[in-house]
Image 1 (cartoon, one colour):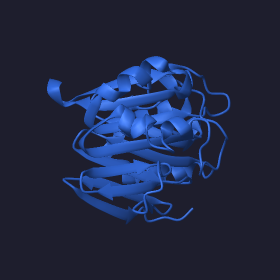
Image 2: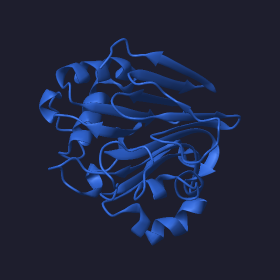
Image 3: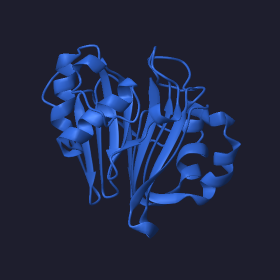
Image 4: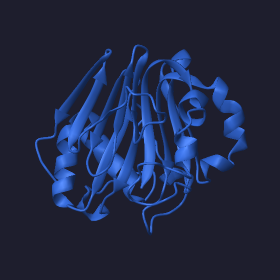
Length: 233
């Protein structure tokens, strides 16, 4: 129900991360290789990055149109660069609105967060801070309310309340990146210049590693920790 990625490392352009890889988010919007739920991610896209030149504030570009149709973004993406990026292409949960505000990444002003999956909104703490009524936006608001640092606790709790949920998260705040696997795929490429976390590999580099289900990934200060969430689905 979406494909997403996060990057933390040396500055890289949005084009380099999203558009140029042979199996990047652009291709994943119409031909994902590992997506288990849905065939297309045509219900919008979003790119968020941290603006180091202006105090490290998060900036976002989101659209309800398919990524392949946005020529304006394609023309600008090569000159938009950041050391920390969260981006996604969306396949909307049935019944959820198709609008830019329903498209990841979501933000609380400090973190950028993307949700790949589906969740019953009735199990989530109600909040008026959600950017949209869609399930992913409400989940993001609930996580922000608890604190993204508590992601390893929140996801098992939500998963226990909704056994049908799929709760893959990628979140970053400019210096740290967190991700969970809960019902969908996630792969990691850890190179000398940084770390990519992605729903699926964007190329055939043999260094990609698949993250097991029900795990938490924590990237900080060049170190990567992968730990079990302490439960099984």
